Image (cartoon, rainbow, N blue to C red; front, top):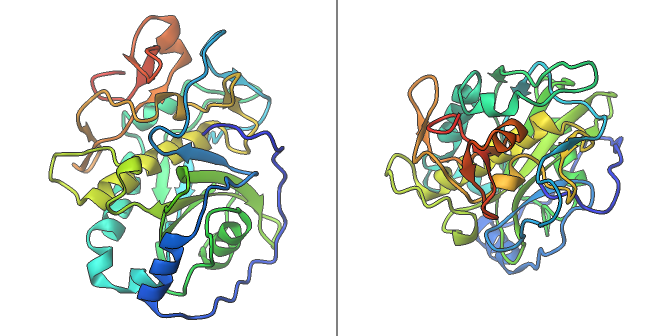
Length: 309
């Protein structure tokens, strides 16, 4: 995710949020009209198609900035927030599909594309992804949700069953992207019990062409396919840039940013049998060795664990 100019600061919060209940359809309409062009300053955003360009000049490789990577992999508790998550029609295959995605990502060849990156001492990113319980919060999300990290951190801290330092808490809201230039983002922060966690934010991407991987397999709904692709993007970056001071290039792009909206293998197979259309991740080793497939700038350094390993 492209690095923003503002420095990352851990936020210590009391994680209790009260949200007034409103009519679901009116709430969704209101969110659709909101102007969300403001990016959260203490997060790394995944831009929608055409909203960001790769910077030229110098080496395209990622460099290390002394921060941690997730050496034991990640423990994941997905959170589904918004009044629409109580509707079976809205939910469709999205909730079960996201759970299947995280369940299969651990020890997959796709996950292995993150493991070349190390932290001080030489320990590599871990391959284990452990899926914990999912949570549905059917209360209404706040206005302009996603513009700041604090409500999402509060939601993660208050709804998760187990707060862990290796925890990753993706929050999927029912609000549409509207005019925002990003599909999702990830960050880190500290809950009121003193535990520093990793968390992420995802818009409702149903019918959103700017965040659509254009999966034509028919295996998933369009909305699930879009969420799965950006979910892989966000978790890959969290693993390699845990506290936003790990691995990124001279322009602030993390490993998934550098291959955003560029696809190699048509469908990636996960352990357990699920298949997904997911973008690859940047590999310094692949670029240096002249391997991989090209990103949007024509630089051959993207690996996806399928035809490009």
